[in-house]
Structure formats: C-alpha cells, structure tokens
Image 1: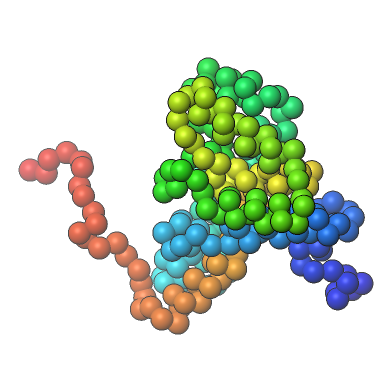
Image 2: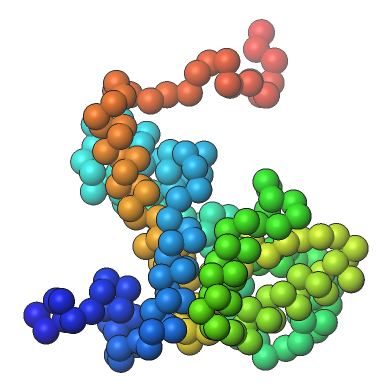
Length: 220
C-alpha cells in the first residue's frame, strides 16, 4: 500500500526485481526499454496472434497469453542471449571471433527490415545521451557492431533486442528476465489489438486461400 502514489509503475517494477528504489537515471533507462518495444506494427507475431485467438471466441486473458507464448527465441528472445554476450567480459573482437568459429548468429544484431540502422535503437540511445546517461554496455554493443563489419564484411546493425539488452545489463538485471521484459513492453499493444479485434472485426480470422501454396507431393 505504501508504494501507491509513491512510485510509478516502472519504479515499482524495478523495486520488485531489485529490492531497492531506482535512481532517476535507472528509471529513465527502464522507461526507455519498455517504450522502445511497446509496438512494432500488426505484422509482428505478438500483435496478430492475440487478434486471431480473440477472433475465435476466447477470453481477453487467453488472447493475451497467446501473445506472450508467441515470444520466443526468434521473436524477442535475442534480448536474453544478447545480455549473456554483453555480460561475458570479453572484448568485441573475441566475441565476434567466437561466434564466427561457431557459425552462430550474433544475438541482437541484424534486422529483416532495417538494413542500415534500427531507428528505434537510434532514438533510444539519443534520448539516453540527452539525459547524460552513459553505459559501458551500450559501448560494447556499438563495438560489436563495428567488429562484425570488420570481420564479417557485413553491416549488421544493432537491433532493438540488442539495445534493450545493453540497457538491461546496465541496470544489472538478470538475462533470465530478457524475454519477460519484451513481453511486458508489448502488453499494452496486445491489449489494444485485442480490443480492436473484438469491437471492429467479425469472427473469425483465417488465412485467405490465395495466401496458401501447396508444396506437398502431387495429388493424383
């Protein structure tokens, strides 16, 4: 009861996880993380899957749960893995060399749409810099991006998962919370999409046959 009116939601969330009230800078960083991933269009799985589930007659909470379940290694999951990489205490050169040997994808870098730079990352870092907030993990992320271009010869920009990871590391949060923070950020967007689906659309959503291509054996 003492927290009501004394802390914002972001401050209270930090308090629950860390056991202490965040500083103004820490609150600003966590706010930036949550706002940066709040929405990224209807095309994202965590946006359209809740709408589909809601359209088939399920409850709001069931639709929300489906959105959370859509967040996995390939959608929001890079936050957790990037945090582990940033926490490794290895140089950018060592990190990229190890990933190259393993032929593994660098978590938190590269994007299907943003080939040069993720505008959400630029906006987040610019905002934090305007508040004179600096982070060694943000520097590590930028160093890895430069090293990727140097060693692989490709421009793999830091994406929003990687940027979120860098800031969460600066807050000394555990990588195990990576996917959870992505889900927390997306919750308001999922809520809005579910409400819109239930109020404006007819049951139920299904793929159009023109969007489906059969690739199985020839039917005789």
